[in-house]
Image (cartoon, rainbow, N blue to C red):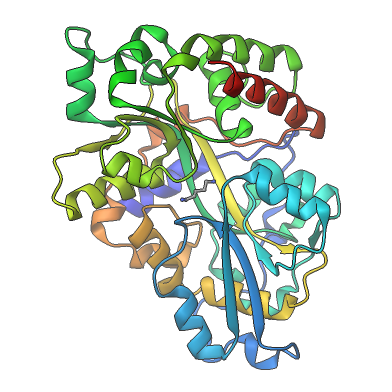
Amino acid sequence: MNRKTLALALLVLAVTACGEKETAPSSAVVAPSATAAAPTLPAATSTEEKILNIYNWADYISANMVADFEKETGIKVNYQTFENNEGLHAKLVAGNSGFDLVVPGAVFAKSQIDGGLLMKLDKSRIPNLGNLDPVIMSKLASVDAGNDYLVPWAWSYTTVGINKGKVVKALGSTPMPDNAWDLVFNPTYTAKLKSCGIAYLDSPTEIIPPAMHYLGRSAYSNAPADHKAAGEMLAKVRPDIRIFTSTMIDDLAGGKACVALGWAGDMNIAHNRAIENKSTNDIEVLLPKTGGLIFFDSLAIPKDAKHPQNAAAFIDYFLRPEVSASLTNELSYATANKAALAKVTPEIAQNKTVFVDAEVMAKMVSPSSFSNEARESMSNVYTLFKKSK
Ligand code: N2P
């Protein structure tokens, strides 16, 4: 039943790039299928020194993934984390980042491909590409034609999360709003909630898109007028926003923030962490009635990577069903690995904030990509917003 729900949900997931709606033929999307886990990794044929430098988002990998890969291949992994797409993008643009494997969001990946910042995958080294869901891969082809550069790592959506008890208390006689986005964008609510802490993600492309969406404009508008409108709206709540962060798990779980504009996956981690810590903080992921913003993060190899064969070996290892499933099971981020779905625990598979129902999914905003100019314009609006208090 869950697989069916997921398949339905994914049918409506449309990754569109700059308004382009073209979709590559699905025959072009996957490598020759080899669904069984390979007994030996393509790493065995790597002619490179045994080093792999990975750059990923914080809190975005299962506990043993790196150690198990190192043990099996003898490849030493240097693992570093970044805070947001802007940070990763700047490193790629500057070049010589030293990284062999990075995890850009779909929103940035198209301009990175177009800008020649990424290397084409050597698909012959990644037989487990056949495990990926062809429906998702055909959607991703609107960002990456032919699926030549990106391998989906995980997906989730940007939304509003709350500490239920604290929010109800802070709102007092004011009932919960009909539209959850009000909790972070409407001064009537933020003025009350500032007492228990409102956290925002710290990135222009994480905040301006939901703000435009809240205003009824396209979340992926490239028009400076739309960015400006979002900035004007955000200025009204600025005095109420206390926390800007890219790692809000502990803020939520520990009770420092009672409301967050962030990623559903991290909110689910916070929910579980609060329980583990035996705290009374009850963290809940809300599903705004106007929809959250789907995001899609993918593994990619920088153009000047020194160890692309080792990177391909890691990608193939990650695409084993049990390895992909470990990420979903431990971190509540959904997978595009179809072969992994059978290994997702019932608890996660049935969590409607991870694999959302088809009707909730239908309202979600699909990712798109911004022009370089639009990112610059949003960055200016965001900087002004953050500076003013
Ligand atoms: C997980 C990071 C999620 C990445 N902590 C959002 N694109």
